[in-house]
Length: 357
Image (cartoon, rainbow, N blue to C red; front, top):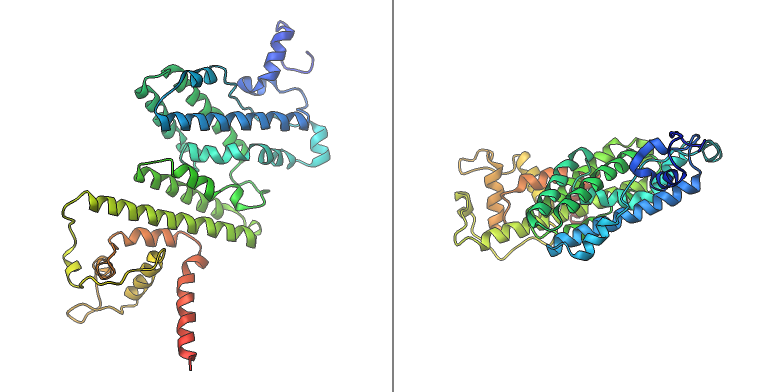
């Protein structure tokens, strides 16, 4: 009893319960001097597993639109919790102060990554919006309402604590994919049938990844980490482009008549089209040509409307470039190396042609 900050009137049984479920009472039950490192590792692993299973179960319920009796029993018995555990001085002296962050990263990284997807944002201060959406879903569903909204509330509270414990500027991780895993993101995105909501999820993670990279100090931006970052950004951009294509086609199929700007009639359609995944590259090139005043209007003066020019080229290639600015913005928000790669490739091909016999 002397190892804990508790009242003498608390029974030994109560103390055991509190120690086993210290997460619900938070720092009140921290032992003087902190926990042994193995205790922290074991507890965090258990927390990680419970949180992952809880999120997976909620995802399944939403997909099936039903809370079963089995689900109800599971959540009634659920030991959902988290409290950051302080290490004892011996563990810190042997391993250094940074061992606390290393333990977090080794034991809770899966929950940390999944929570960003589950709550739809890299910014923890935006999670409250998603929590309200989940609660509204279960209220509307009308099955075990109090149990489900209580579970969502607890999940939000504890995962917010986990997220903040991590510190998003964590200096010790070895790869960018540990923080931004595109395969995991794609798996979650494909569960969302609404294309607009799916696009929002990808865009939020895309923006969050860029913010994370921008906040890194230069010494942390190793060549391998930069490559992983650029690959993640590129995959997000390509997937966003695919979603935009799906949305555009869905819109066209639902309309008997698609309104096109008058300029679309200026250039007749053709049998040509862009190669897969080259739309953004083409838009970047045409945009640069426009800025270089290569195009002129009927009056012989430099073209003064990039939107009309883009729509005209889209009509020529049986595509829709009316949202070209979004593609440019996404491309521009990535790294300079990735953005300029298109122009470097064109320069190389031009040089090949120039040097050809």
